[in-house]
Image 1 (spheres, rainbow, N blue to C red):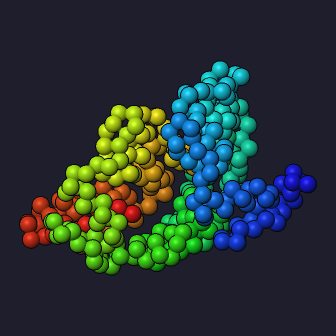
Image 2 (image 1 turned 90 degrees about the horizontal axis):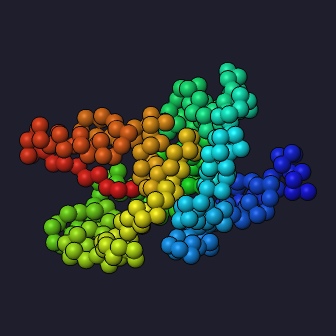
Length: 301
């Protein structure tokens, strides 16, 4: 019965939070974890947790360096079954993924997604209808996960799971910074950012790496550091399958596909695809215009 639903396209199991439909109850259960943030599957080696058992299995391969999926044609090995499947199309002349606009065929679905962007003349954050017409799931699930993050910022289009998080984010646009450091008077829009900043004054590094004993002021920095030991790259681009150690690097990379420039200078209205480019621009303005021009703070998301 479950298999038959894949043919009928019927999706009787619906998420109460975002109303997304699924053909199987187990798929709905997995999806619900994206809302609850529950990660019951824990790695015995580094204690990293995952919402799905499949993701844990993929992660374990980064520790063992095991590559169980071997190409029968050229003997190249891969840690993931999906990577092998993508690779096999390089040997085949078959192009099963066809563009509905121009009938051009592609070996891999990710390449079709990239091609679809050439037909879409509107930028995804400007006109949602364009993305809906050409790539209904791509923009919704990858670039603008509106169903997963129903609370969207009216200024920059960024989505959030919770309304409270959206309210915190809005402070970045209003430039309201109510949380002030008692040591250096630097102001922050969010209390969490102030608490993290205070550790730079105390030199306290409570988060210690179990492998090399290096200390970090923030848990996030320790997590990033751990990837240097495991060589794990958990953040995968759904367009070209390129992997990254950090989520910020993936976001930066996605901008190369979308040509989106969400970071704007409030002084000259120039737009940038990366936050670091905006910071560099603000610094140049400060130098060229003299010390009376204050550099704008660009907070982390």
